[in-house]
Image 1 (spheres, rainbow, N blue to C red):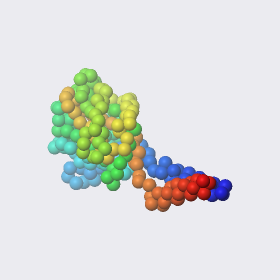
Image 2 (cartoon, rainbow, N blue to C red):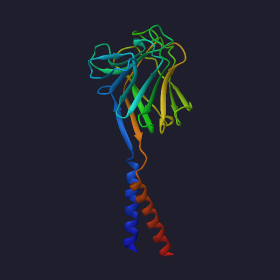
Image 3 (tube, rainbow, N blue to C red):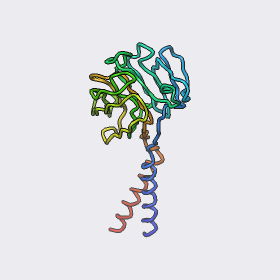
Image 4 (cartoon, one colour):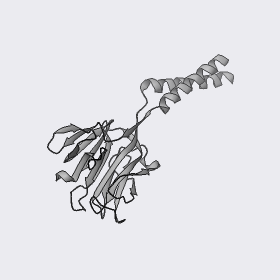
Length: 225
């Protein structure tokens, strides 16, 4: 009986451990990923080139999609003003330089993920200059990929380094999409060092192991009675 208890406990522990490691964390630095431009050409970010007219960007299993990219200056990924640091940048339709209305983040496989935070490089309505404090850019969370479940106003930020870190809470866990958009004054927006964790579904073997552990504990208790 003692051996049965040990075996059951070990099986259950292994199953739980397998499930606990199902989240895979990634730091998206916007370097080494693939840019797809409006003209269907592609490129790789390398801290030296600023890609404009970007339709989408993929890195570490995540995809950023720009909506409202009618001009080259509306969406950019790459070297930020020749400082040797790649960032994602857009110019909103509410400003003077672009037509961007949304930046959308999803996993390339359509799965769920959790967003921990990111660095804000720029959030200003004066295009390349200091922020006024009136900027109204939001980040939204969606559990099903389309419904707006939660919105967080982002702080204003002068268009320059150093960036400021911005952490997100539980509403941004286990989502299928997040997106940035603007409801009022803002022009230039840029982010860097985005922390995201892909939530993978436990493999059949892990589920079977967990089931075996649970059954073992149940059987042990039944024999004890």
